[in-house]
Image 1 (cartoon, rainbow, N blue to C red):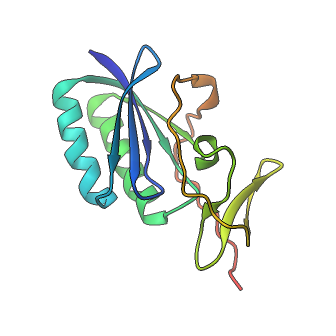
Image 2 (image 1 turned 60 degrees about the vertical axis):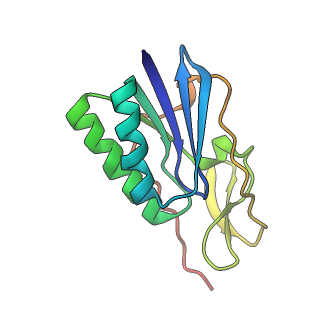
Length: 149
């Protein structure tokens, strides 16, 4: 079966959604570290399905999770020919603040991501259907970090 996979690695628990014909049919909620969880779950997924596309959140959020996810998915792209797309985390949390460092949060205002003192939201949701026009082929990690006072 051909599927698409959406991965939100920037918060705990990590969310993974499986899509057939652009419709969500299975969800995984994983509390393990990204470095442990991605190889384990994708080993199972690659043995079970034919993954055509992976959409992942490339920031902002946990820099380590973003780096690990990028390297992992870029490797799958090179070795398995899987197409990779990216989108920022605000797409999956109704544009709410995302935890940064200390008591700071990332917010998106007028298309720009900046730090603020807003209370972060930890609620991310997988969409019921995929719209590929919302995703980007520029998959490099989105690092946004100003000086923190």
